Structures are given as C-alpha cells and as structure tokens.
Length: 266
Image (cartoon, rainbow, N blue to C red; front, side, top):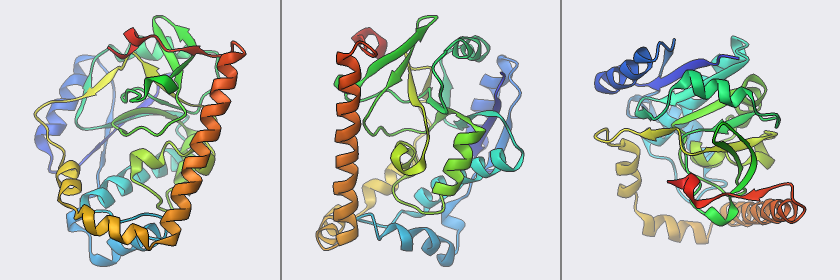
C-alpha cells in the first residue's frame, strides 16, 4: 500500500519546503504540506493548555517552539483520523531522504510482522537493546525497548493515529519521546528500521535545540525535586522500560529475536 506523504512545515519556511519538495518531486512522490504551528505566535492561553497539564508530569514547561512541534504532529494525526487515511508517512521538513521511497515502501510491504508505527529516521542509541524482529531486502525491523529521540520520519497507520490523537490530549513528554511510550498510547507494534533511511538535512538548524539549550536547567532540576508528579511518572517510566527490556531479552533467549549487527547502524 502506498502511504500518503504528509510533510510538517511552517508556512514561511521557504528554504525547508523547497528542500524537501525537491527531494520528493525527484522521486515522483505525491505529498502535501501540513502547516505547522508556530509556537511563538501562540497566545499565552494556548501555551498554558499544553504546559499546565504537562507540569503535573514533567520538570519544566515546553518552550513555545516545543509546543508548536507537539501541536503540529497532533494536527497530522487529526488529519489522518478525519480523512480516514489507512497509512501515512509523516516527514518533518528538514528530512533528508537516503533511499528511493518507492523501493522502500515495496520492501516494507513484505514484512509479515504486524506493525502500527515504523520509525524510519531515528537510529537506536543504545545498541544493546536493539533486536532484529524480521529482515527483508537488507532492511531490518528493529524492536527497541528504550526511548529514542527523533520524529522526523515515520510510517503510521490509521489505527495508531487514532491512538496518538487521543494520547496527544494529555501532554506528557516532548513529541518524539511521547511517541515511544507504547504502554501509554496503546500502539501495538512500534519498530525502527535499519539501516537508517532518512537523516536530518545539514544546514537547517533546529530552533527547538536552541530553545532547549536556553532553558535554565538548574531551575528545572530544582523544580523536579519538589514535583511529586514528575518523580512518580519518571519512576513509572523507568519501570516500564525495564519490563519491556526484560521481555525482549527473554524473546532473544528463546530465539524469537536476534541481536542487531553493528553494520546496520553505519
């Protein structure tokens, strides 16, 4: 099945739109832009709608652009649900395609493992937790029971989008991290694809990184010490990851999973 390609991009981000549009056009891939939410234009009330519930579980509020990123991915899920799109590829506008998408989609169709979301852009950072579930055409479907940052390229089914659309009503962590909390959002079959198929384009700096770096981390750390909700949620998250890691390790011992070869990470 050919997925609908949805590109999250700010309306005024002309360079980024040109970059990703050129790549997709060269591959004869139909796509459409989803106008991203520009966090710095949001009124205080809109920021508070995200940050007030967030601070019950997190150590600091989102920056305006983090709110925009979170809200923009939420818009993508809403579109998929409302238009009943069976399968979508969600790209951020700084994506750099490393493969022919037509061939990639054909290879992914060969997987027999049921899935609801495949992250084709992020590379698991802790290799000891990366297990091969299935291989097709030199591509490995990776079970990775650990959080990973990066949501610039992922395939998502309508079923998963419905779950994410509901989950997004209760901000919990940054968009890319909250995606991985499958015990919370209910996604059945969250995988990564190796080798990495979509990178982040150089020369297109992230405003999110700059804003995160400008946050007073000392203040956030002090606040976290007195935030019972954050303490409890962090403990629960840690326990969930430990459980999922143990479950994957048991599957590995039983021969149902295989350790990912280091060459897949190159």
